[in-house]
Amino acid sequence: MKPKIAFFDFTGCEGCQLEVLNFETELVDLLNLVDIVNFREAMTERSDDYDIAFIDGAISTESDIARIKAIRDQAKILVTIGSCSSLGGVNCLKNFYPMKEVLKIVYGKDAKYYNTIPARPVSAVVPVDYSLPQCPVNRFEFINLTKALLLGKKPERPNYPVCVECKLAENGCVFDKGGTCLGPVTRAGCGAICITNGRHCWGCRGLVDEPNINSEKEILKEHGLTVEDMLKKFRIYDGWLEVSK
Amino acid sequence: MQNKIISKQDLVSFVNNLIKEKAAEEIVGVKASDGKYAFGELANASELCLDYDVTLLPPKKYFLPQKETVLKFKLGAKPSVEPVADAKSIIIIGVHPYDIKAIELCDAVYTSTNPDPNYLLKRNKATIIGVDCLNPNPKAFCPSLGTAIVESGFDLMLTDIGDSYVVAVGTGNGDKLLNKYAKTKAATDSELAQRDNQRRQALGKYKVSLNMPSSEVPGLLEASWDSPVFKEKSETCLSCGSCVMVCPTCVCFDVQDDIALTLDKGERYRQWDACMLVDFAKVATGENFRDDKEKRFRHRMYRKGMYLITRYEKPGCVGCGRCALACLAQIASPAETFNLLKEAS
Ligand code: SF4
Ligand code: SF4
Ligand code: SF4
Ligand code: SF4
Ligand code: SF4
Image 1: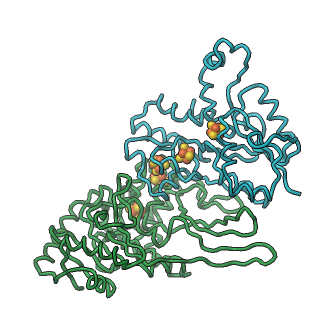
Image 2: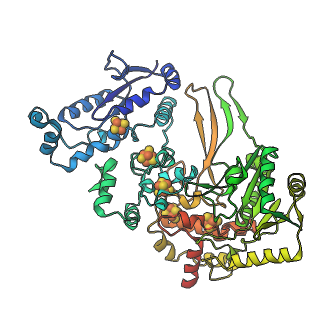
Image 3: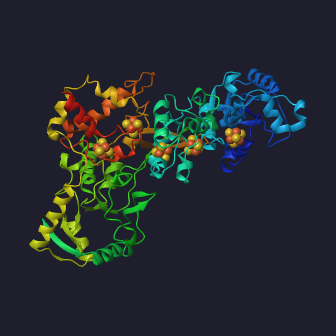
């Protein structure tokens, strides 16, 4: 029997689900291997019977907590896709303000009808089997992980920084052009796309296993960043982590 | 060796002839790229920069591409495997002497024990047109290693002497190319003297040097295994791999399988991998033989200063300075570490 997979979205921009739908050619092959039983962006039918749950979006309300726990109970394998569900991501920017103030900024006088809690990655609430941070999720990585799960192989993710792929792409270094970059501590796997396209790395894939944060901070300082600037830089995607505090 | 003279004007025509007449399937040379220089396909001789300091990646990428499919396979009832190796004829224009030395080392590595068909196929279809490096980058230290000037390893070697280039003819293939596509004349003694003068002046422009003869480096390293220098220097190492990705004498790769979504076929590819990366020496059971940055840093220094020389009798570092230019922590230059070890010894 084909494994059943389901997609669930929490707090995020839904870019991740759209990215998965963007597959076109691969989607047909994928549907030969699995049954998609729950995908709000793509279908109206719903089922609560599934093997693999793919989660995008961060946990940021009390009801999110109850919902993700129920999904965890049901799923054999739980995978977070995208930076929001895997790292907390941009949602965690609000954690640096009092929650009351956040509600007021967003909902104004209707604030009293809403609740919010500091945003967090799924792994802060329930155990996660695999994480695929990137904003939005890297669809090749999503496909590779799905293949590995179907084949019973251990899914591989690079444990080296973006600099490796940046050099393979033969880019000039952002630091040499007067900019700053989180590539040296951020996990590769995106092909250094942002740098290749003329920007810098924001760190959307999270940190490598053994990041040398002190050294990265020293380098950022040498290139003109204040402690405040540095924290702002890390907080874009790594707000949940110690490095941003 | 035969030496000829080609005017700068005629060099432009020569390169344009190579391109127009398709003297090889690919004509590549040094071009401005992303604020630096890089080897890339030439559409016109005007793109060629022969007075560059150093390229981002070495020309090794034409023989050992960053990522390369090495075989295709089919799974299922009748599994099959088909090796993949292809190569285009290529003319590489503007290779500096240190990169020629590095190619000689790669040749030795890829032919000595188990000749690598993918590498050799590409390598054997390559023509190398070198150019003397008259504007070394601030981190280069080629003269200390004897890699600033080469007498072989090229088909043609150019030296800028003002209005023209001296062309040293290294091979019959180089000679043929000149005869067919270029206007040259024989070099006079005074033009050759000018070349010597240009080379001598360039030697004076290097900012980094070894504080010992390079022949002493292997012995120095051998005696320095427990030196605190490795720990001190590697404290700020990001394990980012920049130093090893840009190095012309790094030869390592990782091999991975990519299975199609139909799960019935796939490809095996190899991609550059290197010893400064955390997982490089990790084995299937989970142990990591070089589990901290000090060990990885020391290993790289031993590779560059001892292991390769002992095994292949060729410099394991050619002093191009790329690693030092790329290292954000400013710790990657082998010259600097060797000098520190010497001072401490
Ligand atoms: S990770 Fe990025 S694309 Fe995905 S939901 Fe979050 S913000 Fe949107
Ligand atoms: S641009 Fe960023 S990712 Fe690329 S080498 Fe420089 S620091 Fe590393
Ligand atoms: S370069 Fe950095 S910010 Fe851009 S996709 Fe890769 S990890 Fe994310
Ligand atoms: S170790 Fe550094 S200086 Fe030596 S060849 Fe490699 S990149 Fe060039
Ligand atoms: S020595 Fe420098 S370039 Fe090499 S891995 Fe360490 S920090 Fe990166």
